[in-house]
Image 1 (cartoon, rainbow, N blue to C red):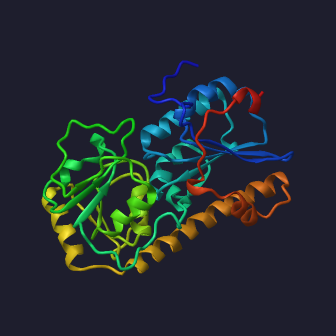
Image 2: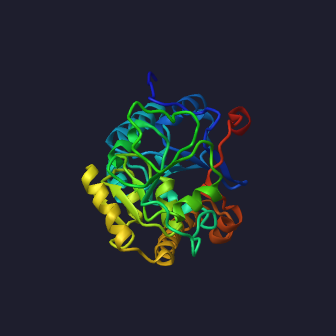
Length: 317
């Protein structure tokens, strides 16, 4: 099969997790479909009839992703029934109807450890807004050019470059901050910014909400808006004036941080319950004598994600 993927796993940060390994079946958690092209090509003939792949969406699953998935499944004759898609939004699930792949809306932000980001009661608000995002062009920092008293927090790793000017700011980190330090900066801010037009569900978005901080977001594909409501967010046009005005609104009309946090946790439980149901269905299908909820609780990890380069010759040999 002659196929070229725009991006290829595995690499040193390859997200692959052996979730269950038993005599009845094996369950793996992977990210995306066409990013996994090379090892699908090399090892699909070694997949067992009882190998199940749970696929989460690290980026917006658009029509292109769906077409690529169909090319790979048809070209390699892989069994769609052995895959389960975990979409970040209803829109993504609709995009993938053409593939015939089973799945449900299980937004990957529901896997965030809720103890990692929280409300620091009594923390003084120092910044009008914060934007925690790598300095990549698709993050569109330039849209925050009119936001006063802005805090910028970015990683200092690969892909953290842009030819766009950095907006005026009151704070910008000069080293990588710890999660606790990021959480403190969020708590010091009246709201958090999300300015991309398309990406995944965006962990930073939910980290704002878990820290009790409302969100100012542009319209976006990818699933982060699943977590938004009229109380915790303003979704506006990608216009510097609209973003400035939304930030000013939250500064003048502060929200209850504990309510914002609890709303996110309550919705995360709904998405987790969908995962547990899907897991229970797989266990029942293969006769696994385990309670899905108990197994999930025992195997839970932050982001449900393990990044390493697996030895496929051992796993599928």
